[in-house]
Image 1: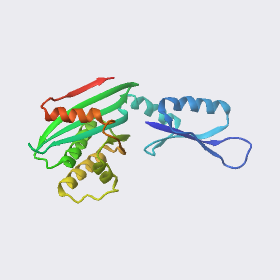
Image 2 (image 1 turned 180 degrees about the vertical axis):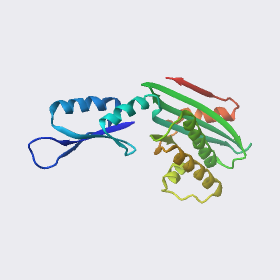
Image 3 (image 1 turned 30 degrees about the vertical axis):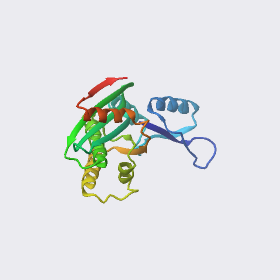
Image 4 (image 1 turned 60 degrees about the vertical axis):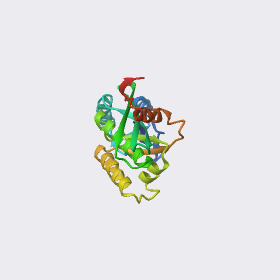
Length: 217
């Protein structure tokens, strides 16, 4: 979770002057506040996170201890593959996150029946990613979501219309899950080479090789 520090200048100038830091890793926030307080030129210090929540320093210190035990800095990769001949879909999901100062990765794939096309497989893969986030206890944080499906990402962003009923159903399910988790998705379209980990998992599922791993990296 990135945060910024906002404070008022405390000096001889009579006008109210407000300063705001760049976004920074939350572990550096209190170091900055300590330095500001040593100068005696800062007052009304508040901390703001990427979700637009604000805290006093006292509130932040308590929050910081709680955040150490929760997943943060989350990046999700998803991909769906479709075997037209057998009407089978392979889903690949990868979630990177940090917790307690350590880095973790979840890799999972699935095979589904009765999907109609590759776009539906892509939606199903992203929906499964939402399930992984829910299992992790992710809530009220930004999440970067990366995939090589322009259709899924543009429709979720609202830039492209969605006319197919089956895809609209998946869209509604994903948006409902995002709302229930309270996350702020940041969608990022990437090339297939950048998405090769999720792509490989999707292909493995179509070959009946199933993966579900959760480990440090």
